Length: 229
Ligand SMILES: C[S@@+](CC[C@H](N)C(=O)[O-])C[C@H]1O[C@@H](n2cnc3c(N)ncnc32)[C@H](O)[C@@H]1O
Image 1: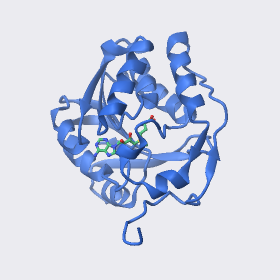
Image 2: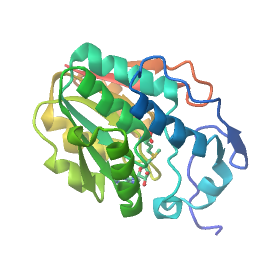
Image 3: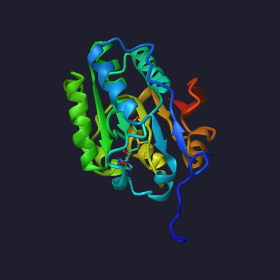
Image 4: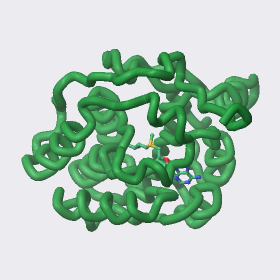
């Protein structure tokens, strides 16, 4: 084990349970969507970060979502509605918590589709079921496998991208795969805020305008919001 690299836990102690506050959305009104979101969040009110830190392989965590905070979900929902985003890309699906916010936003904004990538087949299966139970199946395309490969098949003119990945961090690799397909004015929200990604998008003349976006959640306090110019 001594030689096994342990993931960076974003400043959290690597031996702890994290208790999350109860689920609450200010923006989602659809009872079916709310019901599934509530259920997924309740399943993970307590997250064992020690377990995560010691088993970095995502296949070891097929039953755990490690989802965004509801506050971040609401922010994504509002940004998508404001921009009337129709083509939304997501890395990664997990059990579908963030996908539910994204898909509800494109549907409520008049239509569109979320193209979401997930490595672990058992997670794709669970997410499909969750999205279907929420009544959003017509708005989601699943890509099963390594996002660095599958997202090459994402559509042109992407309006919005969520990057919420895993260790070792491949956020920048994923950005580079979708970058040629981002329309001017597209927004990218990176929950991971990893150094390589930030150095890339914050370089002068990178083609991005960047701002940390506070969520109001103590559990997941902020992400990096980048505008493709
Ligand atoms: C933090 S979770 C995503 C949480 C999700 N956005 C949500 O809010 O519910 C990260 C996910 O990335 C997946 N993952 C890790 N490496 C991947 C890769 N190379 N391609 C696709 N998915 C990957 C993991 O299996 C895990 O489900």
